Length: 171
Image (cartoon, rainbow, N blue to C red; front, side, top):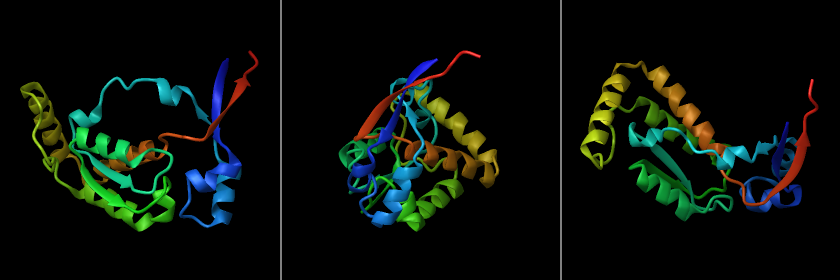
């Protein structure tokens, strides 16, 4: 099987990915990074969950990996509860308390905590169904979904990526 692995260039990682971390931490991130498949950036999601469930979004104002204007656009499109902080792309490492606070706020919010109404009636019905099921779920299940969403966000984007072909030999 063939594919392309993407890596952040080690000499660029600190400046474009983790500028608010100590250089030693950025070096560790560079040395221990795991490859991302190009498929992660090209495959379309079958369902946009933000159309049906309340969303929370952290905008990292100093992000050089994903432009903060793009982050704001995505948050606005999802009608997300948005928090902005002065952080690089790795807010979860540089500002763990701010990220934790946002996750806890999302995990403990009621299912109806959506900041704006749906765009059309069918979306409204889907959101109402989603809210009803969210309200019947325990908070720890909601926390698991929020954590999964945060993890997905953290895996996003890469401006200074290097492609390397990988080959797997047939077994």
